[in-house]
Length: 412
Image (cartoon, rainbow, N blue to C red; front, side):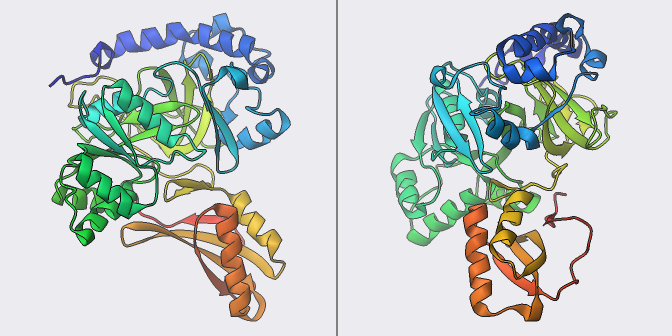
């Protein structure tokens, strides 16, 4: 079995850095020439002068958190895409809402590299449980698996009983999807007496892979690796069998910045992941993901020489992922607007066994009644597209610290 996807993964660190820096001027020039948004953002920038990391650090940062505002003002993509909507292959609407696209060419999101590192090879069958409904996750992994020569079961999300029947029938080699849903399928298979043992590897994303959950999968014969990708940037980083950090993709430039600034941090310091993409169709320059991580020293023992990040370490802003979907402070605010009885509120995200859970703590005079609590819970699901609990507390009891979303999960 081949150990690496291509020769780019094992080139010297010096050769990689030289190639990426040589590509920067053209990437910046294309962003300015092909997109109205970056023509404005980079108006004072001479692309020919952006030949190294120091020059790159002088460019403005564009934040993912600004996307909704930009896309509202300049639909559909906020002036940041180099393709018109009719030139794309697929169009998506993710929670937020944030609108994305797929270009009509192979390898748009570059997830093939992560699948290969997980052990998928031509002839394998992949059971893909990322959503195919409006959001791009299903298509991202589907296209990458087929590009590798794998067959794909388009499982999507939900319908666990039917999915288990398909697994028992087709005998897929592995799973792609969120970390938690694989357990749902394996448990459902055990409950129904269906053999799901053909699944021996998994590539997960869209949520945190907690150490205890990874170990539980290993005990059931499934080796699970994770990748870090977004619909805007494609693959950012992925794990290899070494499981020592996440290896950066070969077609992006990653900086770790002090949150809220454009200032790069030294190796080892935790900061915001900011990516410059060499994607000609979506040439994002210094695009701040809102995610926290840190660059690890040295190279991976697996032989891949690209820099590594520690992994996803939370959000630089207050948005967080729950069951693979982003929940934004604006969505919590939308719940409050529906219920004038609520004073201050805080959405607390925890773990309930092996699954994410969220509870909205609301300041309500006299604790409210059952009807109000039920109505708030209904609004929470409508605004966040996820079910959550509701607890009422006395007015003035929540901290006055501006925190709207409190992620209490452990990422150790």
